[in-house]
Structures are given as structure tokens and as C-alpha cells.
Image (cartoon, rainbow, N blue to C red; front, side, top):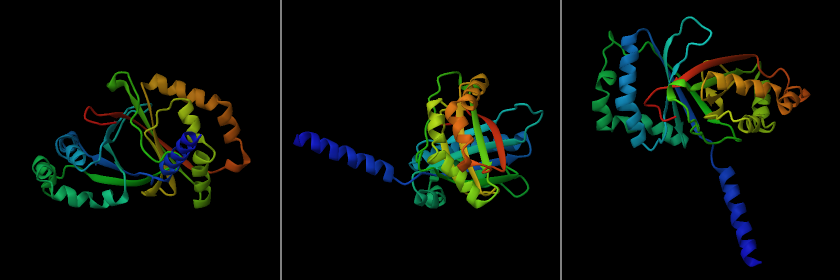
Length: 257
């Protein structure tokens, strides 16, 4: 009996500490390039210098993605970099860490030391995201198919007011929209609140699929699911999204995710 009680106490302790862990901080950097030369320089920097340096700084998995042409005739040359931080302190100290990393400085010299008249990119857009309580840590997708066919879907939901935006965040957490995504196998990398970005108030999440056909099948199942129909029609969760953006991405060959 005492052994069983001890086991239950240990189980409760582990459960409490698991939920007490601080949510991850995510940084989404978007490199906007004007031509192929800039795109190639940024990719070389990321592959040879930046990603290896982040691994040395104990950031275990970095996602590098490029847009997929889907129902559009043209795409801006962009590179999306997803960086998960186990703590805010790790984010604050990253620049100092990179400055002291001699391997990084040498491998990334072309990018780091670029002159004003030959910049490696046009602009960098940075978005800071805090993981949702219901999904406090990012996930590495469990995909088995050909890497070149994979589809990553980045969604951004803006709220008409701060209060209504918080209502949508609650819908994901207390309303268990995240649980629905998990049950239907959406293989999400992250869900989170945007702390700082050009579009506010805002939340973002990233789901993954083996290919575009799989993506269409998953969303069809989602829209037809009885729980979603009940949740989305609830009087508690109405008019909480004023604008949505969807970007389709594929992982580069040097992406960890």
C-alpha cells in the first residue's frame, strides 16, 4: 500500500512540474530578398554558419523554410527561420554568444561583413511568439514521406480587439481546439501568441502534412468534425478573428524540422 501511495505521489509531482514548466519563446525571422543572388547568400549563411552556431548554443532544432507556390502566379523570395528558445534569457544572450563564436564569425563572414552597397537581403522581419499553455513546447513533425513533397502551413489569426483576440487564444486552449488538431493528426510544430510583430493582436501556428493532398484531406476532416462544429458555433467564441493569413512552406534540406 505504501509503495502504491509513493508511486502516486511521484506521479503527481511529475505531472505538476510538467505543466509548471515555462512555455517556450519562438522567434520567426523572415528574410526578404530581392533576387536570387541575395537568396543564395542568405541560404549559404544559414546553412554553413547560423544553424551550426545555434546548435552549439544548445538550441537543438532550427526550422528553415521557403514558400510554396500554391494558387498564385508569383512569390516573393523569402526564407523563414524558426528558432525555439527554452528561456527568454537564452534569446537575450544569443547575439553575445554569436559574437564570441569564432567558428560562426569565420563561416559567416560573407554575410556578417557585407558592405552597404551589396547587402545579402532586402529586409528582415522578426516575430516573437510565446507558446500556448496547452502546447508549451514545440514538436518535431513525425512525417515519413519524401521531404520535397512536405507541406508546412503557417497560419496567422488577427483579432479585431485585444479582448476578442484573447477569446480566440482561449478557444485554442480551454476550448481545446489544439486537442482537435492533435486528434486529427495535424502534426503541429507550434501554437503561440505573438508578443511582437507587425500585425497585432495576433496568434500563429504551424501544422505539417506529407503533401498537399494530405493537407486538403486533413482540413476537410477538421471542418466536418462534430466537435469543431460545436466549438465554432458556441456563443462564447464568435467574431474573434478579423483577418487570417495562410502561407505554405516546404523545409530546406538543412532544416531540423
